[in-house]
Amino acid sequence: MSLDELWNVALGVGLEAKDLTAGQMAMRAVLIYVLTLAFVRLAKKRFLGGASPFDVVVGIIVGSIASRTITGNAPLLPSLAAIAAIIAMHWLFSALAVRSHGFGKMIKGTSRLLVENGQVDRQTLRAVHMSERDLEEALREKGIRDIGQVAEARLERDGSVSIIEKK
Image 1 (cartoon, rainbow, N blue to C red):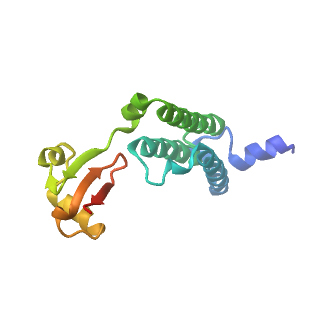
Image 2: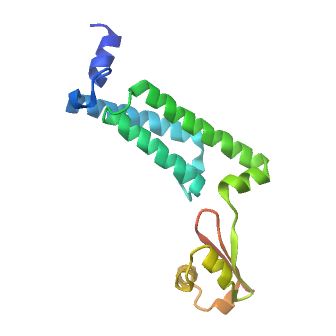
């Protein structure tokens, strides 16, 4: 048996999903895990840490393609090509966003000012679907008990709240 034939048998290439053995699915899982990890490592460090919606969407799509590939519901090599294409697009869009403020704003959004000089902007809170209790929780997480201590609080593009205390 040639190496190519061994590879096809080990991964169940050409078989219907219902015909894959547990061993073949396990081999596919290992291959998809290793290759997807390599693709993500090539993408960028911030891909999932402090992820913006832009980053999360890529994670969801890659996960969906990978899971269908592991279970045999999608062909192996075309799925790997699709994952590589999604990661490449993510890398390209990230590079464009760095070079073009307008493009970056379009795909990543902008931060929103929630508090200025101790005054809560309730209209912005409503617009971003955030309650005053949510804001108070974010302040407590930063060790701030009184809104009067806040010079500025912003809802950042990744959904976190950044806070600058008054001096």
